[in-house]
Image 1: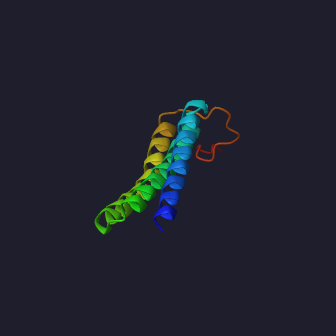
Image 2: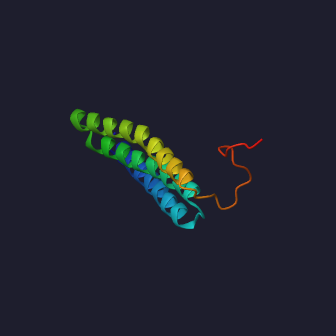
Image 3: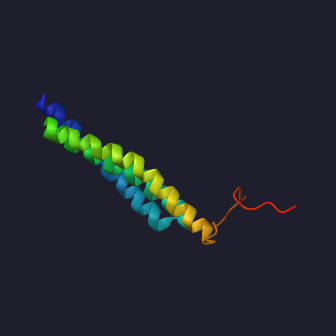
Length: 110
């Protein structure tokens, strides 16, 4: 049983680290603020969540498992909200997308 848990922890750490690395690469490689927020907001949060899952499995203490689950819940709630707030502020400041096809938020003039 201990070996299975260790394999589970190692797998969660590797996948979480891979998600985090992909998020960092996306942040540096993508052209504008909106796509960078997509990479760092979505991929980065799930990388940290998987690292927290590995920590919960490794500790197997009810008190630390509860704390870890609360942290995961807070990350899953605040991550998308933060990304949305930053992208909304960038749009209101007039920062345009690099290669936009259409703008659904633009005022329609008639």
